[in-house]
Length: 195
Image (cartoon, rainbow, N blue to C red; front, side, top):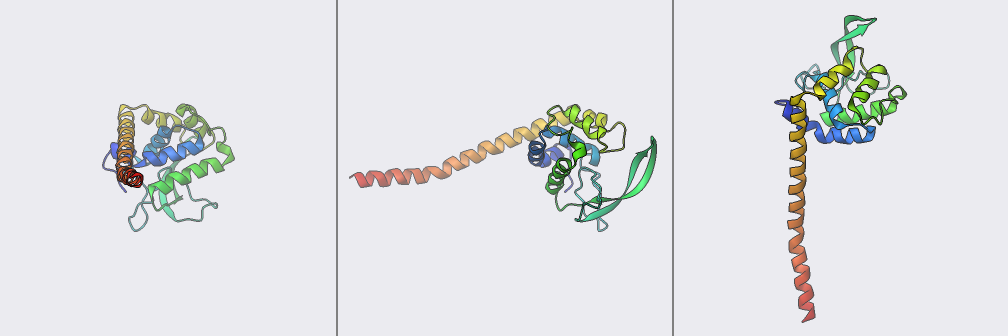
């Protein structure tokens, strides 16, 4: 998975972000903004040794609690205010959807993120993540919100929402058309039984 542009990045991840956001009690858009920051809009997702994507959209490291696949990657961390390059192990997933679901589990399962949960205000969610130590970058929350508030991001979300509504409408119309022949047959059978 490598989206062609920002619109595809948001459109592909939108339904999964909605599910994760619902379980966290937050705005789905802030999750997508965070994933956009972590991956450069899907263009810089960490790769496995064989070149396949790790699908790690949130930069979650593979610590002792993780028993799934891993990928080793160079990262930049702030240690005592000093920028340092380090090699670290990160979680790897079979699909982007698995990454988003694991992110929701990771946040819900860590008591240190309790103050982030249930924040409908995206700025507060991002701030609480940073305060709890999700990332070492002191400007992490601000960077998430810069993406969140950008015209490009808001447009991409509007397009994804519009496509979702259109698909739901089309599915409803198809479902309605599929049930009509059965209803007609039932009505015809009922009438035949009356005569």
